[in-house]
Picture 1 (cartoon, rainbow, N blue to C red):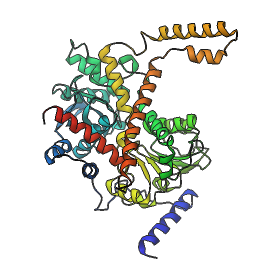
Picture 2: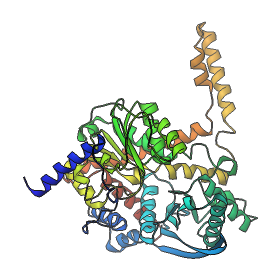
Picture 3: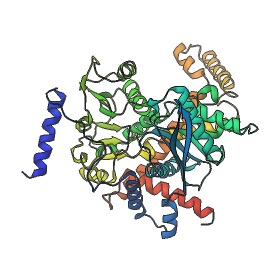
Picture 4: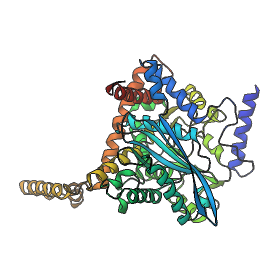
Length: 505
C-alpha cells in the first residue's frame, strides 16, 4: 500500500470517528494550500480553454471572448463611529456583446479583483446558456456585513452605489446588479433608491437593479429563484434514463440521499424544495460554523429555523452535530449540492468524494484540477453556469416587468378564469355530470405573477438542459473528456461569438 492509500484510509477513519463524536480536529482550510491548485480565475480560464479546443474559433475572437473588458476599483470613505472608514469595492464588466450587462454584488471581507473578474466571466456564459439577453458583470465590496449595524450598512451601501452610478456602472440600460453573497432585497432597495435620487426624471429607474422587495418593484419568486432553478435542473437530469445511467443512478428522485453544503438562500431553498416536493432525503447540511448529519433525513425548515434562532446548529435535537463538518462532503450520497463558496471541492479532497452526481449551486465550487479528477472517476457534474442560472433568469423577468411598468398576469388573469369557467359550465351542461370542486378550482384559476415566473423559469431550465445534454451525448463517444460542463461552455461561447460576429468583429 502506497502513502496515498494510507492517507486515504486514515482520512476515512477520521471521518467515521468524527461522526461518532470520538475525534476532534482543527478545521481544514477550504482553500487548498497545494501549490498545483489553480486560482478561481485560472480555473474558469482553463475550463474555457478546454471547451475552445472543440470549437472552430479564430485566435482573435477566442481572446476577445475570454478577456474581461474592464474592471473599476473604488476606494471610498464613510464617517462611522467617530472616524473615517475606507472601503474597497469592484465592478467588473466581462462582455458587452449584449447590454445591459448583468451580475450580482457580493459583500465579503475576502473579495478581490480576480474573484470578481472570474464571476463576471461566468455571468457572461450563464446568461448565454439560458438565452437571457445580458452581458456578464459582477461587483463586490470588501466588507463583513455582520460587523455593521443596519443603518451603518445602509450608509456604506449608498456611498458605494453613488460611486458606481455616477460612472454608469449601475444603469437600467447599461449595468444592472442583483443580490449575491452577503446582500439581499434590503441592499438592492437601498441601491435602487440611491439611483432614483441621482436620476429623478428617469421613468425606468427601478430597472437599475433586480432582486428588490415587492414594494420597491421586485417580482414574486425572485428570492427563491436560484434554489428553485437548482431543483428544476436536477429534475431535468432525472427525466432522461440515458443520463441517469452515466451517473449509475436509479430513476426517480424519491428517497435519493442529498448532502447540501451551505444553508444560505440558495442551499436552503434548493434542499427544501427537493425535500418537500420531490421526497428527497437530506442526510447532511454543512455550514461554516458547524454541520448536521442524519442518514434518516433532516428537516430542512426546522434546521434553518434553529440556526436563525441560535446562530449555529449546535444543540439541534434531530441530527448529529459536527463542529468541523467539511469531511461530510465525502460521505456516501446520491446527490451533492455545494451551494456556498468557490473551491470547496479541490485537489485535496476530490478523490474522496463519493457522490455520483454533483450539482453546482454555488459559483465555481469545484476547481479545474478537482473537475478533472471527478470526471476520471465517472462523476457527473451539472455545471454552475446552468445550475444556478435561476436567479439571473428571474432577474430578467423582473427587469422586463420594471420596464413595462405592469405586473405579469394583471391584464389577462381574470379573462382566463372567465373562459375556463365557461368551458367547465358547458361540459357539465352537455354531460349532465358535475366535475369535482378540486379540479374546477385548479383549472379555473388564472395564472398570477408567481405562476408565470415559475413557468418561465421551468421552461428556460428545460430548454438549456436539452441543448447541453444533446451535445454531451453527441460528443462523449469520441471525446471521453467531453462532459456537461464542456457542453455548456461550447454552447455559451458559441452564442457569444455569434453576437460579436453580428456586430462586425
